[in-house]
Length: 292
Image (cartoon, rainbow, N blue to C red; front, top):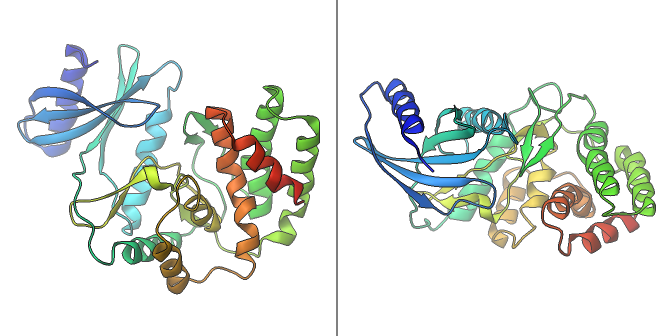
């Protein structure tokens, strides 16, 4: 909950950011996913959004999320909540940000969403990876830089989770060997592309219709990777409207063979969900691996 010490820290952080004295009037618990406690913070200067979690278990999670939101904000493509402050208080880690109010979708919502994502993906850097490790859900996401996407995807994404799943006896040795075989084939599967700035966790639960009727994205797992990763994940867990995929393809066509790579790109988020939530993801992972 929001104790007096945390209230003082939040007031000081907001006062410094906004250059006006901020008083916190109330903190109302709101729904914000499975990982964090979330609150709407009422102040004399309006409302803000607060996340809390256990600082001992995830000491740097909110620092990483703050950096990811800043990176997406700086890309000036998709709307994201402005991050305002992060820190720790009495064993709780906090992340304070702009509160995004829900709006009504404009007529070209999906087309604009896709075009904005394509614009974001054109922001690049020399290597695949990111400035530091971060998180996807509560899982550590390794971002050691590599000049090769297949090498990055194998070493930083697929095999760490495959090993974790095997150690937890979620998968057997046969699936480990299938994953290793797939990783050896990645250089033949993916045509060369420049690293793209990815949201990294782009599914239907991580966007909303913002106050301007356009898409607002949040809860990122940012890194520079292959842009087909965002597109493939957007097809999972309910998916996006069909207009989104057609509009992206019109804005920046994917390389030939992208349809055959969807499953390979979905393997990472499916592994994440299997490790976090169990459920039916095991059979989907096995099916993808068996094709290789």
